Amino acid sequence: MYPKDLFPHKEIQELLDLYRPIWALGYAQQLMGWDLETYMPEEGSLARSIASQEISLLIQKLMTDEKFIKALERAEKLEDLNEYERGVVRVLKRDLKFYIRVPPEIVGELSRITSEATIIWRSAKKNNDFNVFKPYLEKIVDLNIKVADYLGYDKNPYDALLDLYEEGLTTDDFQRIVDVLVPGLKKVLDKILSEGYYSKPHPLEEYKYDVEKMKHVNSEILRILGQDPRRLRLDISAHPFTSGLDMRDVRITTRYEGYDFKRTIFSVIHEFGHALYDLQIEERFRATPLSGGASLGVHESQSRFWENIIGRSKEFTEAIYDLLADNLSLRGKYDASEIYRYFNIVRPGLIRVDADEATYNFHIALRFELEKLLINKEIKVDDLPELWNNYMDKYLGVRPKTYSEGVLQDIHWSMGSIGYFPTYTIGTLLAAQISKRMMREIDLFTAIREKKFEPVREWLREKIHRHGSVYPPKELIRRVLGEDLRPEIFVEYLQWKFLKT
Ligand code: MG
Image (cartoon, rainbow, N blue to C red; front, side):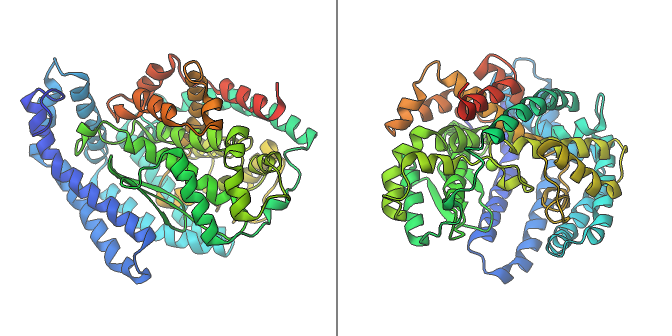
């Protein structure tokens, strides 16, 4: 039985009962995914991929079952649904849409080709060999074009793919963002580079650290931000990620490379932001379709808020200075202002995941432009490497010399994800707008200086987290900010931070 005051209609209760095993299978799959990246012995992957595929098929079977579809249709027809119930219907309709509209043979083909392609991509990237990956990418693009057609769209086939990752996002929406963002960022970046302060090399980039001491630093940082260890744990994996199993069970990971300690610190703070979102969702949404975040973009706004707005601030650097100095032997060598510069190096580079606040969104703009052209059949996969390099030149003034540092760098396309990248920029823009809005009510930088994050967490819980996925992202954003996404706010934030204007 689900809470009657949230879900008063018996049709919704029935629907939620039918959803329960689907939720449980998703839960099992997520836990298996976390285990695979953290503790599973390497050779366990053979059995794990069979088990995981079978669970996916079970989920698909339960969702496309007559009984489930009928229950959803009955629920949808009710006219006096409250907002929670409307949320349930909306989220389930979205989940079901893919299965209903895209024929099973296309879904199967996509799943087969991507499980092969991710392996091929890995060796292609390692060996700088675009040609071996090319036929796979061609097939993936082709299948995505078909998927877009089956899903349907108003204006642009790319809309259908964007909507898979960010509900309601269209090509026009994101084009408007890029058209303001790129020239705005270009101006700021040119100025930062001509001043030279944030772009010059910093000795801490090469500085080696002791992993055990670094683990202590990270756990102290989590404690300062407000970790409840009974609900949130930190482990190690090759690529940092968050696994939000429940409001009382979230796992995050980081990695220790042994040098350049800002990398592990900011991955921990980033994943903490994701984790806090999952931890603060209304508990009575447990095991319902509302128990996730509003969208990938909104989720990313939470990680970027903690990572960039808080973690990379002068106030936070000062607040954790003693912790860093004592554990990494920095005292007498680097003061807080030196560490602040190290945390905020700005330098155009080839690799998206290594990019700083001022250059990151150029990498996304490039991927958006190329994906849009591919899905509209205006370019071919063959054209990608050259176009990629030209965009890098145009946006950041750097040109990849290898495919590995260019078109082959991301895993996303090999996994079949076309339309995913824009969610990263949405998160970045939203984080800046959220902090501006928050500062009307909270003296954010005093809170950071005093390491008093309770009001900050509470503000985010009240305005964003607790709602889970009740509202579609565009509506949630309007409720929180009283306005839509505005890229100029992010540009102003960078000017304020790096140029003091
Ligand atoms: Mg993230």
